[in-house]
Length: 381
Ligand code: ATP
Ligand code: MG
Image (cartoon, rainbow, N blue to C red; front, side, top):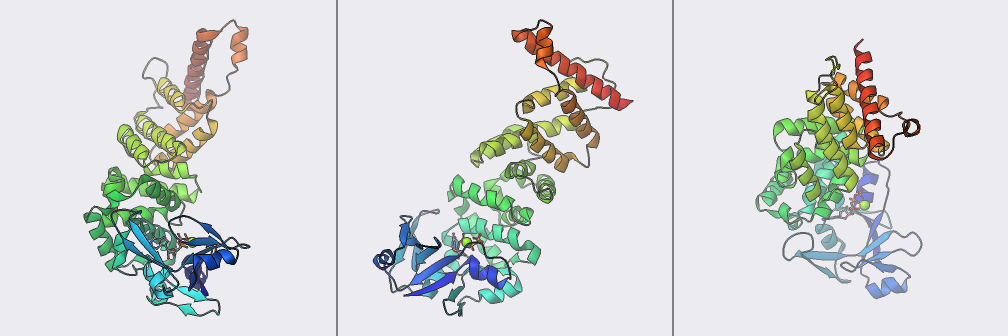
């Protein structure tokens, strides 16, 4: 039995990066031997075990063959006669297909080290085609290692394009896609993830609304800004949707099965942006009727449920600053002033004045509107 460190840990160590989690491959062992050594088996699909002390993952060497579409269509063969090289052959990228023995020797049958030095993300073999998730993984590694100068190799990009053309991306289940998007949003250069997907055509399948140049460049710019501010997943996701129309974008976020907080923030962003772009906060707000800036702002604050969801509103402001910050500074200022003005109302004061029930609600709303109007006027003078 021989044990090797594989995958990301070997790659990251060669790049001089911190190794976070370590994966191991075991050659020449049976599940029974592993159990006898005190390992516990995890997962029913593959023979993967947890080390009794370190709890790191040890997988028996295996080969995989495609059967059917998508992620689940694999038949796995694992036995003591599967070699290290056969196990490395099933992996996605050459830089992820290196192993280090316990003695410290590097096994690198697919020239991963050369690709590391050349900063190229290259598929190990044509078996790459058998799992469309690898397109998303490749895009994610491109986003992670972009600052180091990595790019997707021309051959791999070509292969990914052909996979997309053959409809493979449509077979991915939303949960797997979301998992990759969520991780990608937090990589070093998240925009690169979407750029790679766009280059190979996968974006047209996954988030087609983003593909047109105007939407795409606005989204990427916003994403870069929110990344620089260390924004949350929901803020990053919402930035991506900043130029989309509300019904279409909302339906897409739902189809992607993004978590609720991501869907909600994206939806609010799509409602706020076009409304704020139309807002003329510099007009005197004497007439506080329907359609006045004060009314529009109050309606927005109500949509965002500012008073019950102040943290979410803060996130929304973050996103708006990263999207409207350069073009609609005045409108953003007006929104911030309106939020402040409409926040400090004490219902008790109004109750003391005799309001209750629906009348109390109406009185609060009137008071908010008056305060917003006042705030807008004083910002004019
Ligand atoms: P990270 O630093 O994100 O953990 P990693 O390279 O270790 O990166 P893992 O998802 O932990 O990635 O997977 C471990 C290894 O398993 C990879 O390096 C790769 O060799 C292989 N692998 C994982 N998923 C796939 C896949 N879908 N197709 C082919 N090989 C894969
Ligand atoms: Mg890993």
